[in-house]
Length: 432
Ligand code: ADP
Ligand code: ZN
Image 1: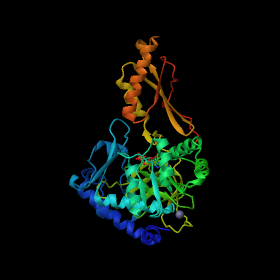
Image 2: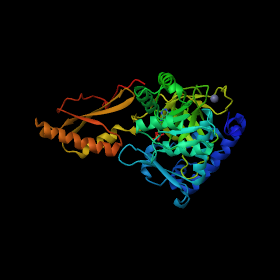
Image 3: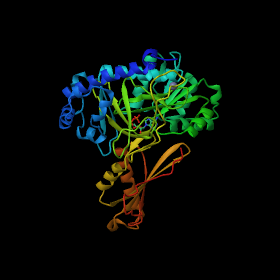
């Protein structure tokens, strides 16, 4: 079953011709409309006419999250604001978020790609989609929402959290497809079990889980506990949001929608393009986006491409499960967290030293973040109340900057191990 049979099963030669055409148009558009790209191309001696084949792409510069930050908020938009109909944002490495924009047509394509993804999971207009991805500046909630409507399914825009109510409405409304992060799905399963809910008696048939790394072990748990087919969905707000790639029932990787995105795998250290099948960092070029086209965006996500034909008949190349990152970004309860964000908060407080450790663990299915931080010598007192008060102030500030709650644990000066090379800031004890 396909949503858009023609484009999803396009023979590869045709697909490549189409990609080149769209790539050339994109290059022209950014050259004309985005001063940043024009300057960068000029510096490298590249003109739009220099790109004559897909291989020529390798001459184009990479774009990084830092470039996005330098052009905050709208500097990389390729259309006037009057053509932008929506913005989203995700957490940046320090205070400022990464901002992305969409034209009407961008939103339209996004809805199409999510409709494709839902159909990949067996979705039809008869389905009831319980959308427990967060709504708001995050792309998850609204991204899935518009695609489910496009399919003609009935969306329950419940957003994340409020677990008891989720479970009640899941039964009452007869949800057939659940969309959320895999860890939240597991939490729903566990809480449901506690309430005596028998998922085998519910009409749930598929789960579309993404926005954070998970594993085959988690897939087995989710499928067994929730009695559904659990599939992986990949995306990032810079490129669009969820629906950049979607797993099909073959369950061997996610088809990246190549009529809109061109994937490459590079060596994260040298920037060299790696041959098909090798593991490295995923780089994506958007070829149909209007408001916020990105050229060779370094996702920092580690994966590999599988160009083998897929039994499902889709011709788009598959990416394997994301197994890690080439930077230090953590995903905690679906939220992106950079150690540098924590550091910048600590620096605001004179009472602490920039010696800290992030300890991440998963209790049951919920991620927990503990921040150990040294108190400055002169502020270290045995007045428990003063220290507790400082912990609370730090916790509040962390919550407002990172968008997630953390437990701050103050420790005595000089107790966090120093390292001689790169400081070790993170202990990740999660087993996923
Ligand atoms: P989202 O709102 O979807 O979380 P962000 O832009 O905030 O989007 O975060 C994108 C990052 O989330 C990706 O670069 C990747 O590291 C991670 N991510 C998204 N989907 C998956 C997935 N299916 N598996 C592993 N990691 C994922
Ligand atoms: Zn397939």
